[in-house]
Length: 229
View: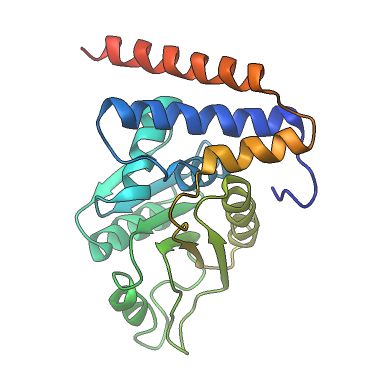
């Protein structure tokens, strides 16, 4: 989904509501907010039979777990990128999932994994339906089997969802794996405010509607927390 081709009010309202759900849950857990766009954009683009493996404990990848708890998703935690890759490869080869996304923070953690993918006469990752998501800069070896490489701003939920949808389309025709880079938002850039401003400009949202969506998100999170007490 790209905001260059204006999305419907219903599509954007759903993304906005989901980001506010994640934010309110993060606030209850005293977790830093601002990573909702990555979590919501990624999980909203994955299908119900797809899976996600998150390596690391920071920022966006922690928000992915919160998003999965709130509106569903098959999310597995891994201790490091190598473990995440092994888990994803087993899922992809086992046929239990069509697409498996692997998330790792920062520019460095997947470097060793990429090097291993290209080792041997037949690359270990050839044609596997795996989407690698990582923070910041994108670097892959010249001989890497990565099929598609895209980069998006981490505060733009529509850009994240659109890029993931594009790469998943590649993976669904048996090409892969693919790589998505998530650029760290500049300080003070709020993904909720960014989408809300876009919707205001396109006459899809007003202040009263935004307050109502936020109140509903807060109430849903309170209900979730009560069920788990």
